[in-house]
Amino acid sequence: MSSYVSAELRRLVVSRANGLCEYCLIDEADTYLGCQIDHIVSEKHGGATKPENLAYACACCNRAKGSDIASIASSTGELTRLFNPRSDYWGDHFTLQGLLIQSQTPIGEATVRILGLNGSERTLERQMLYQIGRYPPQAASRLLSRNDS
Image (cartoon, rainbow, N blue to C red; front, side, top):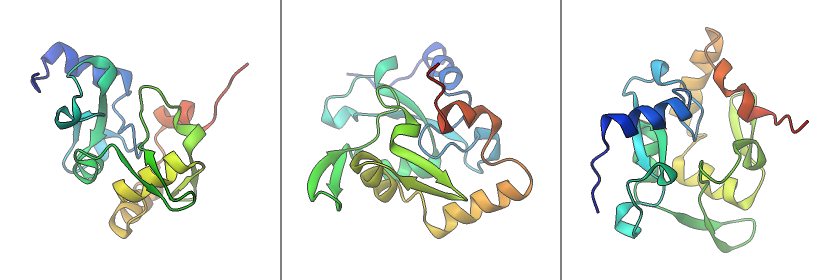
């Protein structure tokens, strides 16, 4: 198994994500440390370096997630997998209420907590971006409300 991500594969992941972190929806242009390629299921847990196992994540989300793939959801007390941008729809698990990313499911709950999505630094960052019209980014609109018509 190799963690090497070719330039072509990186372009595919970035393009598919519209340049947004697939967890917190921040635009790469608005992050101090940029975005990174994330193994949804880490290599440590047998995850491959293939398009279906890669997500685009800001440095904050990627660092907080690390090699985690699950956590205990306090609402159920059960081991619950984290949000998977390749198989899950963001709007099914989260809503944006003001500047807070609220969970809608145990998967969302576990992910919000593990990634620290509503930590003070993260919400301050979103507040500053909101004030200049950069959050939520326009490219995130398709994730915030589903049009199934």
